Structure formats: structure tokens, C-alpha cells
Length: 293
Length: 344
Image 1: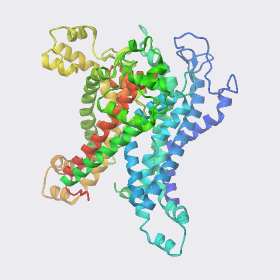
Image 2 (image 1 turned 135 degrees about the vertical axis):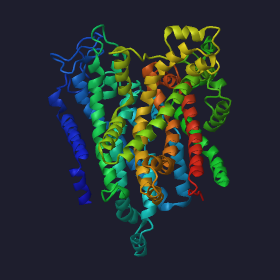
Image 3 (image 1 turned 45 degrees about the horizontal axis):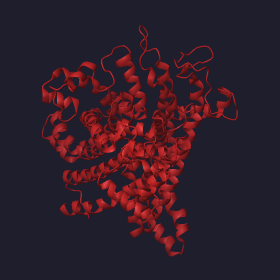
């Protein structure tokens, strides 16, 4: 285990990933000082500088410029970092817990319980994630919280399948039979012996999903079913750019900052999680060991 | 093999029933009046009528199982009522928008599969040298770049920016007039295919210019994933004994890779590619919205924004059933491609 973490800290790609994540954690923590909110009670409301629809380029007062409706891009990006962490931690955390519970139940009890739970997993898998989340958010009402609920309702199945497979192989180990022989309760066997030995791949999977979940949530906001207009959310900021892909004569890329700045924020955020997850996977995969492949 | 397919077919109705239950469950979050909209076939029906009387008439206050049974029979008859976002009955909206999405899906499927295989082969053959590293970096960056950001940036550069080669929409003004004229027969309602069937190259070129950017946006994320699978699969195959044998008997390296290694490495790729093609619908939602394609995906987004639940239900059910069959097809293909796989 220690060796694996050491590998993670010496792999250049995962180090870059870690640096970016720590940068974003710093931004999220320091948000009230980097971009002080006008009204401390509502820090996620992006301040507006007038009501003109034409975006204004980066300059005095707005270092990243303003987007359609004069929302300040810098403020939206800084506070959007907090939104991104909240979305990814909550969705990934809660879906992983639900998935692990269901997968453990299925694998430990087997038989009919297993069959029924796994068919439920199949059914939930039968609706494309983005579509399912979009429809459920619409029905529950447009808001970031409802988008999170929808992402969790349709996001737990992968973890359930993963932990089930791992437990099925751990279950056959001799130390489990030994624990059963000395009369340990089911609860104790699951939490003391089985889960600690099968949870690690789930943690890896969860770290890899941190980035993708942020993209999916941002996509919902972009499509107008996630965060409310003016809420500090990267996808929401980019949705304003849709009407400004055409520049003017002589300055064809005039409104580049409306897409590129929030777009760079979301891309580097996901990239950092993927770099770490990728390194993790190479380290964990027994086929990739020995440096050969 | 046949018994496996039979068993899968027997499970199929249960999975579809499960999908129906999920969608029906979602509908239960709606108020009676919101659910009523599903039964209205045009706004004219609502004139001079009392909503409560209508709700009673359509049995919206009945016990849940009665309603579920009736809903299933509606679904089987493809009866989803009026689509407020499309301003036409849902059935008609579906048949109008379906060819648009199908055309985009067809044009994206081929680049996805061929591009993924090509990039993966390139990375594996050049294992651990510069090309491999560039390909893997491309995969990770591509996987991290949201498609709506990529779509807007591509439009900025290739439409509004430096050049204006690839405009949004499905057809230019002139091409649209030709397509809508009486001489142009619309066999499939897919512009590129109709243009070929009519032998009209002007329309064809115009349609292709409109389809290139959306097809790229639909493909690049999946290239990233397919590249990774193809790469590791090919690397594993290249170490197999029969590949060594082929090399030992003096085959050219190109032949060894193309004939001996790649064919066997393709098995996992084909199955994953099958799933991705079924998942194209996820991409359609975003891509059609950005590029102003009036297809199923954009219809669903409009429906979501305007709270047009009857259209959304049709869309989500269509997706569910499509995916169930796609999964079945992929499993069968897998069993067929790899004789070592047994399903007992």
C-alpha cells in the first residue's frame, strides 16, 4: 500500500494532477477573500454590472471580462470552484455509499437477493445517464439540488457492480471461513473482513468519477435544467456564451473569453482527477506491473 | 449459444417492464393537471372544459395500479399525447425528428469506431515512445474536455472565426430550398442520403459541410475511451505466442500487426464500440443543441426547458428500450466473436 502511494507521488502525470487539485482546493477555500461577495448571505449569486447583453472583454474591474447580462466571469469561476467540489463530493460520495450497500447485500447473501438487486441495477443502467438525470431534474424542478438528487438516483449502479464482483472473490478466501467458524456475526464479517479487503477499487473508481460528474452536472446547467440563471456554476457560465460564437468584422474571435475561461476551468478540474485516476489504475492493474507494459 | 440468446430474450420483457416502472414512477411526481397534458391531443380540446372534469374523465384520480395498466396500454399504442414544445402530437414530432438524429448518429458511428481503432493501434505499436505518449495525453485531455465547450470553440473558429467553412444548422439557405422543392424526393428525410439518391451533389456537399463539426463533437470523447481499450488489448495480444510465431517465421511486421494481432485485439473493442453507439443519444442531446439540429436530442432539451413532460417520457422510454436491445446485441456479438466465452 505504501509502495503504491509512493508510486503515485513519483509519477509525473499524477503529480501534475495533484498540484491542479490542490490549486482548486485553495481557490475554493479562499473564495470569500479572492472574490468577496456583495451580499455575504448569498455568495453563489454572481454580481452583475448593468443589464447590457453584449459581453465585455477582460479589463479594469473585471479581470476575466463579463458574459452576456454582465455577469462577472472571474467571480463565477472562483465560486464555481466551490460548486464543482460540492457537486462532485456529494454525488460521488452518496452514490458510492448506496452502491456499496446494495452491492454488498447482493454479494453477501447471494441467491434470490442477488438476482433481484442485480436486475434492478440492469434496469437503472438501461436509461442513458444524462437523459435520465435531465428528465428527473425537470420533473423535480430546475435547481442545483434537484440536479444532484437526479445524478445520485441514476449514478450508484457502477459502484454496486464493482463491489459485488470484488466481494464474490474475497468471500471465498480462507480467513472469511475462519471468521465464520469462530462464530463472528454477519455484520462483523462484512465490515471487519470483507469490505476492507474489497473497497479499494471502488475508491479508485470514485476518484475517476469526480471529474466526469462535474462535466455531467455542468452539462445539465448548460442545457438549462441545472443551476438557476446567475448561480455560480461553470456550466451555467458557459451557457451564456451560446449566442456569442460570431465575432465582428475584423475581430472574428471577439468573444473568446466567454467560452475559453470557464471552459478551461472545467477542463483542467476534470483533467486533474483523470490524471490521478489514470495513474491509480495503472498502479492497481496487475497486468501493468513490472514496468513491461 | 442459442440457449443463451433464448434466455436473454426471456429476461428482456422484465428489464423493459423495469424501465416502464421507473418512468411511471417519475410521472407520479407530477400534479394531476401536469399529467393531464399527456391525454390532450391538441390545445383546442381544452377550450370551454373544466380541468377537474377532464381529470375524472381520464381517470387520473384512479388507484395507482389501474393507472399503471392504462398507461402501459397507451405506451404500447405509442400514444403520448400533445407535445407542447414541438407544437404537434408527440407521435408526429417523433417521426419528424428521428431521421435527423439518425443521420447524425450514422455519420458519427463510423468515425468513432475507425478513429478509435486507428489511434489505439498507433499507440500500441509505438508503445512507450513519443507517439504513444501523445496519443495517451490526447485521450486524457479529450476525456476531460466537455463536449459543449468543444462544440462552441469549434463553431467560434470554423464558423464565426478565422474561416466560415462549417456553419451550424443542417443545410444552407439555397440547399434547403432545393430540398423542399417538388423535384427533390425525400426518401429517408436524411439530407446526405436523400441527396445521393436524388443525385444532387450540391445538396450533398452542403449537407456534409454542416455535419462535419457535430460529428467531430460526437466522436472525440469516445475516441479517447476506445483508444485506451484498443491500446491495452493490442499490447496484450502482441505478447501472445502466436504473434511471436508469426514473427519468427519471418512475416513482415505490418502483416503481423494487421492480420495476426489486430484481429484478435478487436474483440473487446467491438463490444465497447457497440455500447457507445447506443449511447450516442446522450451526445445528441448536447450536440444538437449547440449546432441547432432539430432532432430528438434538441427536442428533449426544449421539452425539459418548457416542462413538456409528455415528450420527455416518450424520449426516455425510447432511450431505455433502445439501450436494452443494444446491450442484447452486443452480448450476442461478443459470444459470436469469441468462441471461448460461454454463458452457463
